[in-house]
Length: 141
Image (cartoon, rainbow, N blue to C red):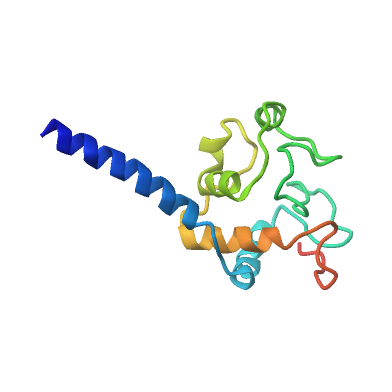
């Protein structure tokens, strides 16, 4: 019985981590752009975007947490950035699922996006925001 439980645990860990990584393999950036309108209550994107209630989200993928110049971050977010937190697909996925749990003490008021597919779509859209944003992207606010 113990051997069966051990085998089950190993398979669960392996397949659970594989499926978690596969979940971020895609995403529909068009659907993510539609979802971003909720984010636009606090964040700007695109050419000429400025920090607002939340920081500009251009170039978020690959950026260290709390590193956008001119934005006043919470102490908790600054500490995460100083500790080396970089926004990847995986870290954004975890943060967007439950911001206050991922960075305890964050000022982000959003409760979290609990739909896995919707998060994948939103992250796919955020990945398109290179440099100052795609040329066709207008500031969304």
